Image 1: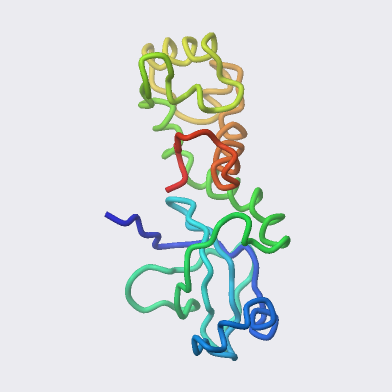
Image 2: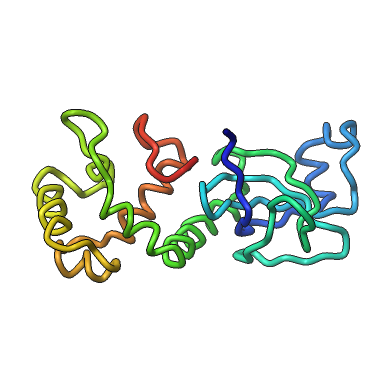
Length: 188
């Protein structure tokens, strides 16, 4: 089953003339010359996408737009998935802030990860994939969540002494850049 995004955050908006210079093959493919392109990141699976915006519509970097099935207000079509290397420099510089925004607004989802994460192999736990969590901190997390499930990032910070929000953001960015190991925790 293909994981589909319903919403995405705009990372960069590229005017149509700039897009045609960047990729002349778009002319042959019949892409509209009056639609701005946008690079975006999905807010569920962190999918990097290239979109076209509807004519006479504006969107801002950092804006959340609907990209799911059915009528869309700003996005005309999803052109394709893209890799981190294909992002513009503007999109790359906006990425950390937008990933942080997604993590903040979906705090419950990531707290749930800390409360339910399990082992990957006999010798490795999925929590250890977060940079800065070694065996000692892992055992501390497992012991604390056994006593009482974590309620918030602040709760984890207070009980364990780590910044879970920062660790998650770093992991997502590493997975997007392809610098993470073979395991993916958050990027679809």
